Length: 249
Image (cartoon, rainbow, N blue to C red; front, side, top):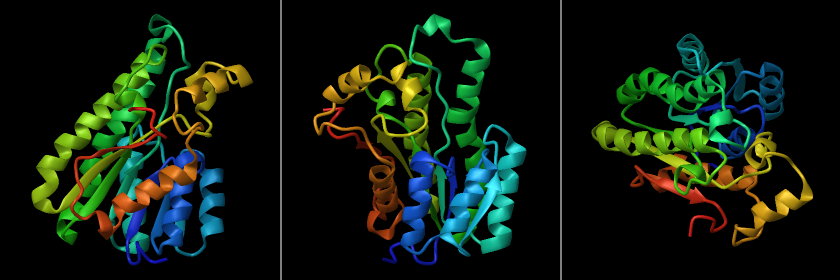
């Protein structure tokens, strides 16, 4: 239970859902955790339950100033950053692409796309000085096999996957690995928005296209992220790993 022993990981959107699952799983394997989230009460709860090897930082990933403060907090407390997980995400409600207003589109851009740029600018120089690191982004199956109803969200996740691959090539000489996770819809706070509304009938329809017959869970995604962050994946970079119960087959 020490696959991340000695490593420091920042995880955004870590107060709940996939991010919380990653924070808890990484900590079980020996990592020190920065639990970053706009929901500071939730972040403090997760960090408090992890213990002394975790800190909570209120972070709006859409703001470069908050990203810088998050990174500074990690360095002041732990002295290094080995893993940067861009997990915070936002979506519009499933529906007509013409019905998404500009403010919602801008927030999708800021959280799902520009936040990756901000985090990369902040952590890459640190990782380079340390001799390497790992950047992981929570993308989505929506970026691989888009479906109607989530067009602008789909596009943002496609962008994240392309950015991941391009970053992987450019940062490889610095020994910084860059990978993405592509979960299918999961039991998180965003599920109702993905489906449009949360009813037993709609849940059944969504599950019917997942060969393994269920939604993803935070633990599914956390275990995949753990592997990508660990030394076991030291030769893996530029991958968009499908964690989807066969959805993309």
